[in-house]
Length: 561
Image 1 (tube, rainbow, N blue to C red):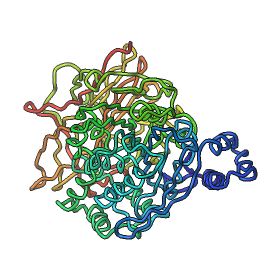
Image 2 (cartoon, one colour):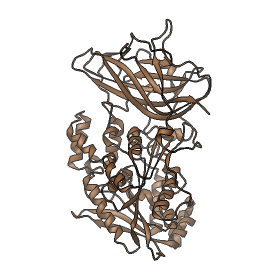
Image 3 (cartoon, helix red, strand yellow):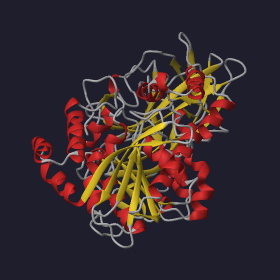
Image 4 (spheres, rainbow, N blue to C red):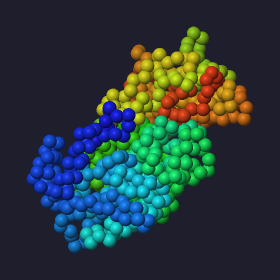
């Protein structure tokens, strides 16, 4: 379902899609010719007429142990085999629609012979209670709902899986880490470490955090969550915040996943702005059971949108295969599911690469040392030759500079990437007083960046603390226009002003193909509205390279074959 471009909420859907979902549910509840016929305007009448012939649908209100009512729906095949049916539990994504976000997937699950229970987590959409953000209370609720599902006459309790997108992915993963009855999980736009998603290299992801809080509705949040909201806004990153995030991080369920050998499918995006991609990759690498990782072009939720709308998408098609293989349904084409790493490279939507694991996927890194600008030149070089030390590049602190940013619009910038229109940055026009820039020589042949990147640089702020943001770009030297490959923020805090600190930090992993003649370009500036920076103007920062710790960017780069 496309986002509503006229809404300030990056997760909002269009009014037409909202009307469509309402019409679908009415047709599911009352599959009369009039209700089914209304779906013809979206070309859906045949699909839901078929659904009505093979499955029944009902709304549920499930009471939790404390009396809180959870809004849910249940889809059950009309012909239940003697061995009963596999079942899918689907906790909702973070959307005002709640469980209705999954309505368009029901026909596929029904054709595959699955019982499906969708629900909106506590406090979300029409469910009662307060929002706990996939906390222990949400896990307890999910366990109770699994019991409700497992006790249905049509359900084989030994064949229950979870599918979830975004918030639903996190809920599904945490449930599987606490309830061995979950035999398979597919989580799209998942998270592995909530703290790393909120706080990266000492820097708050404030724009994404505020967008999520707005979507949750602060007035519906639990007292515990509201306290954490205020702490993050005030940059009070204490043990309370860390523990809040830890109990909501699937990575802390790794022992349970591995002990039970839970088959886990994870999907994310190269330019994911909501959850940490390195944390998802790290969790994937530490799983020992059947596992699959899909990384796509775009941002949070972009890849699965068509599939949630009842169309075809890689994440949802992989999920159907995953559940069929591990639970015994028939919702997919019957092909063996993809294990290991599956990826797209920027910006070819048709690209589809497969590797057995992350180790075989990621290319060996190559170090490009940062050098001083030559006489008469504005920018330094990125060179694979010997490191150059004892240079200094001063940068003025800016609290408004936005010539280069992670994403001009959350979610929507990624959607444009998926359609082949990445945001264009005019890096030739970047104020070199507010940013330092280094470039390679023009590439002599097409190259690919594939894997994990790392930056080391020495930072000397005039103040006690400072934030810098590093961007690696694909630059066309003929026009000065560029596209972003990856980025990372870094905040340093010192006991006194003017102290040099050498930082070595990962950039977000990337898979990017560069054409012959392009240049890799590293830009370091001091402000990006996506991050909450520690800078105060007027002030300044010196970027430098020393003999003991020469500055470099490590890039997994290879000739395109």
